[in-house]
Length: 207
Image 1 (cartoon, one colour):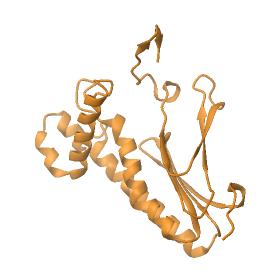
Image 2 (cartoon, helix red, strand yellow):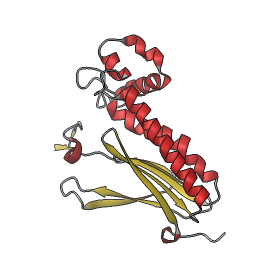
Image 3 (tube, one colour):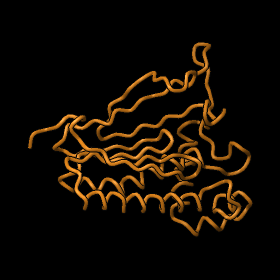
Image 4 (spheres, one colour):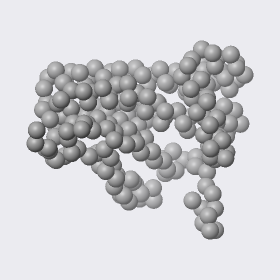
């Protein structure tokens, strides 16, 4: 099979809004066939349901979510969800590895939001999108949720997912571009989400 460049692929894309964030689901294909398009849309529907479930468990804004109930002192809710247990351990490890720069108790009560989105995107991507690469017509898949990106490509394609990094001081302008094949990328900024990033002084400058 002759390898193709990005311009020669067809792109299937679906954007769904969940948790006040746009999630962009993409697949690059060699040919647009109805059966493949239908399978892609079915996976998009499953991803939407997966994100609803993540929100039901981890939303700090829902009083009946497991995170809210745990923050209110119901420690036994940890036994109700293996996902909650997995994220709880990840948050604790992140707190230790970063020496407290990631802190699930940064608001005074338990809130692992800072790690949930990346965890959910990776899990959903591997479960719902990566299997599409077994189809010989699929060159690559990607999932972007508010700047957290998972991407993968088939072995027989030269597809690259080109990712732009927006200048936080000039929205709409890019300060960098990164080609992704089988990789992940996480970005964040204060211009859209407010002040939520801890900074450390290095050589007298904040980073």
